[in-house]
Length: 412
Image (cartoon, rainbow, N blue to C red; front, side, top):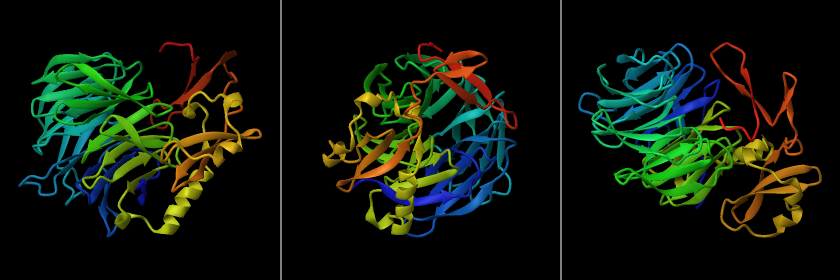
């Protein structure tokens, strides 16, 4: 069975930048709206908002859930923000954080929890990662990356893995650098454990790589995303990734793409896998969504139909769909043929329009229109010069975005 909508978590007023789960019945989201939110299962597949975590000044960028201990039977929640702090919360009493961890100098953009319920690792724009006891002590500062540390992972009690905008993945043991993994050709954004010895990394080069940490080798490159890959997560034998192509990709045995989940949002910023194998994502439309393969946890049919309608009417960016060769696209006759695999996405040219369709339940269903396909080869002007792209870059809260011109032949 393909993944279908199980629940939609709607309360944030800006992008959901981070998402994490405790078991199968609690999800935590964090957002650019300055809050975190705890959601608990409300029967069947649904979730209801339980509490709001309001402890940061500015955007909240990252979240991790620490396992339960005798002292904290529901575990702890850690959130990291643009204010360079980490707030630690008891999900039973969320009025105030139980601890604030200070030491980073810039945005805390990545968090990961240890299996002991006490250890936390953080990554920051300040180019460092830090290992913490949640009581407040920083036990190690991991310095060595040349740019922001976007992804962190505690592989075991002694081993930390970090990923950076410098395109490198680094392995550390007891605070000392032991391995540098090279292969990505652009910023590495996120990390996930595949098993006790393998790690997956997601990057702006559009790939997910699987590494054997002990051997220091890349064992597989997972290709399927058509744009930047922002997130990767693994649990319950499931590996999932999300990115700028508005999809979540689920990978079979960390070897090949098994499922494609399309959402009506420009960016999938974050993903997590629940203990029951359901997949959740946080997106640029301020929503989080949970998807399942279990019929008992499906959302009501009207809610699933609304999601399909939202997907069908969504205007997609040609840049996010990869290089669109208009002359080479098939016409509507392609829709008379069956897909090569379940959940395959194809683009079809209908006159001057380019439409995207996904194979679902034995038929093609429209999942969006490529709004700027006709203009995807046109240059854009910035300060009197022509560029392939001009991106908007958020530099700080409340400030107008910085215009960043870029040519496809540039090597940033």
